[in-house]
Image: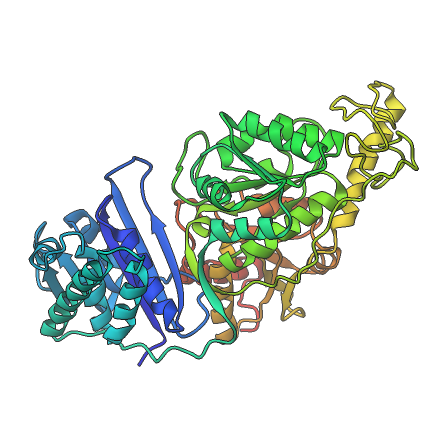
Length: 569
């Protein structure tokens, strides 16, 4: 028996790989397994190489898995590209309709399309593949029959016919795998869940968190991989006082949510790197005029159009200072699907607390993957800005720190000015006023230094500190290193800027802080070095997430290069 099953479906766009991977994940989640999916595909509308992967486990899942137990190759290119990731003893299922291969190891040839037609359900090729995979892992058929019934019971006269056809297709796949005589290590029985868990996509969970935090206005422009946030909001942000709009450009979107924040509403937009570039001036306006709003940047490969459907962590420096002039925008970067819900709440709270723009920095590998997560904490504090009661007159920008926010039509009339301004918002170019107001704007960031962080083996002089979606692979590598006796510590926070004050103090005491991040420049380690931390990056810029094994190797090399020997060896 085993704890893990890692399956990859690979082929041409339009062959249903993502549907198969998500179907396997949904069926496994229903009975209590932990799951994580990952998919990658080209940017063209149809065609091109696509693969989707599902990891099923009895334990918490930190990565999508380094090696495959089962590879489903739907064309020759997929076979040639991915066969190297199949572990020794793993099983290859290939599309015998498209190509043939030498029978090396455990190989099953299936013409799933022809078999699907024989069942009378030509669209059920994916279900046949799922049935074959389930049998290879000796997962009970009933798991998948129940999933099919739940998925296709929609109150239509044809429901039972569709269910019967898919159950028949499932059996065809099971029979084909049974006839092969092959199996991988069967999965242990699913664990008894501690509390209610749900299977959810990163962008959807982030959207739920923002809505729970009281979001009033969402205005966005479709751009991969952030579009599903806009779509989710269009379907779910509704009710009195709520508004969702689709903009004609990112410039329009940022202008609209700055207007929403100015009117007293909690406002948000979502975009990707190219859109964040266009939003720079509008974000600067929100910083200068002290208007709360949240900008979600779902990072993808760049620059320019770059890799619009691949993952990267290369927008950090732009997120910290997206426009010209002196500013430092607060940034929160969730490290998993589970963190997307609270991260959205924290971002909304930060915007309200310090009265300015906040960037919620996620990435494609989190945004579009599914994970089973605990039902979120709905008791998290929800903050609202301090609203003016008129006691300060129109001195909106007086002194250091925040002042009560005047909502238009209520006491405290002022000018929300993007030019440098005096206490009531009137334009001025006086040097001393610019100094006072600049220091005021930066001083408000002190209100945001209370974020939580993780610390493990804090006595170690060398620590790992990934950020964003590199958290999972980083933690998996850290766990392996510790199991092997390497004296290394762990730090992590989603609160990237400003960092929690206690965390920054701890990091400054370390001889080496190793930062795994998906970019060429080593952006977060450069930020840490500017804060007095001895930081060094492990970088990757393939458009794909880190693998656990690669990080283990790179961390060991970094330690050796630093000290000439392994820490603790």
